Image 1 (cartoon, helix red, strand yellow):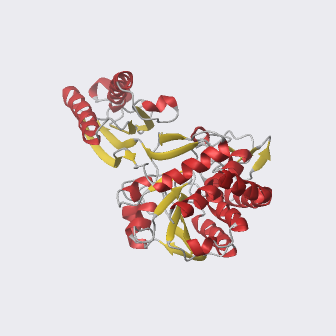
Image 2 (cartoon, rainbow, N blue to C red):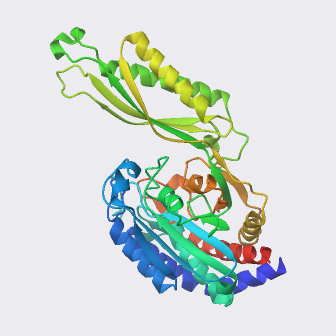
Length: 425
């Protein structure tokens, strides 16, 4: 503890300088609207980030995902996809930071321009301020902060930064972290441990996430003139009944199941779902012969993906058969809950770092939403998530991240890396 307090004291001497650099770069990143879908301004962001990597001493490369793979890997959106990565150091311990640069569409109703960030009352406002461009800034500048007080750092460790697109549009396969793993950018050979920086709070260490199932449902009826509606088969009317049936099914699940795991926030300990979009009909005076909607079902670890898939499929198809409608069910994304083994020296290094910097034992949590950890987990690459900001700010209008959170995360990350090196001796 005495040694760690000494390290923190040294880190804090440089914190304001490095934090200012991190926030200035965060402002630059937010100013590029990397909205996904469709995948805007990806090349501009890749060039900005590579320039910063080179400035910070990394050997960097931009990888363009092959054009012929895009129809398979990009289910939502369009345009080229780029992965930026860079490495520095020649140490035995290999640490890889992984983050995403795409953000969800800003939408309307903002008090300020979502892509002209504002710093006010201790927060930075803008789309991506929390999810997760602040995390990208912390990944970069925590290393620079540690370099300030630990000249031999790059003799002890090899640091790699991997920044990907298309996290927000998920997928069993995608042009982001999936491609990074499958193409060999991230492997067990070049990564002893990976660190994600999604916004899950400066007091929390995340060791996994809930499962998920995304289905697209198409309901087919028959058209007729609106004045003779009884001659048609109203896809809207049936779809509304079907959605109500799904809602009742999910209410029962939510009431009967609660996870033993520390999923945050508290409400996410129960199974959840959302009907994200609903598109029906062609004209006001025509009975709709088609409806399309999405179900995004969230699983707690106590549930099995195969069971959830089967239950939803049976509910939908049996009701359609009973009422004489045809339905198509397309699965777009599915993952079991991911739970990492926390009983290792790397997690211990970060537990100690959070405890010393924040002043209390960290909360060991699971994320309510899925993120790119799953791609590394399935390949046997161990990881954790520690990042500034809170998930409740992600995807919101007037999204923001606490400047204090960013500063805390910079110190925790720097100390965590230091502890990992010490534990690796």
